[in-house]
Length: 277
Ligand code: PXL
Image (cartoon, rainbow, N blue to C red):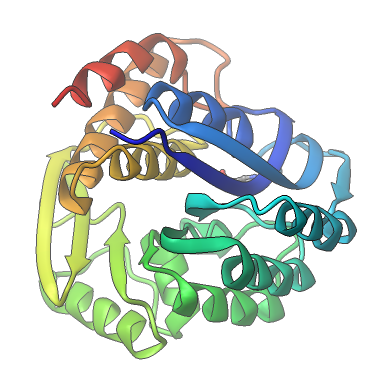
């Protein structure tokens, strides 16, 4: 297989096992070169810590992009996660337009909300800008909260297949092409992921663990992109990422005082094993 390179654009939370500190090792474990464009540097993530620092790197983006263009640097995929500002989303759109090669997959995880709420620091303008970015992507990976915010649909914790179909339709109507909808639960003790690709619905169900961990969305998206660029189909990649996220949550279950992230490191070997052809 040709050696492949992914660009991932998201923040560095120095402590907190999320965004780039998760994406780099996981995509590397998938055997793919990982280039990074940090969107911001925070001392920790924003979910549960208080008093964190936040340095917005929006201003650096156009110069970095210009240098890459001068060097004719291209990528096999661009994967965006947590972005630092509304204006930054415009720069990321420019990067989508300017640095993609013909076979470059654009994957957007609209990482901005969970459990019915926007993360601290985001507002309606950010959501509107994110909507535009999602319309440019080949694959979007929202959770239910993000899908509702993007489309204006009501957020529900109890729902059926009809509600999920409406969410998918609403995402399609704002321009999303292929959709990986995470955290979809149709039965007690189960959860799963919907893969809507080329107008076809598929669902992968797996066990719902009693503990949940911050950062599993980033683990999921990174493993999905890594497996997909490695050559797996979107459904296979979605399944591998879900199985890996479950292993990470299990690996964290018995840890005391590990509320801020998931221990994804001890089970990287299992992810590598799942990728074997
Ligand atoms: O896991 C998503 C994420 C990424 N980066 C930062 C965050 C969050 C979620 O809260 O705060 C800085």
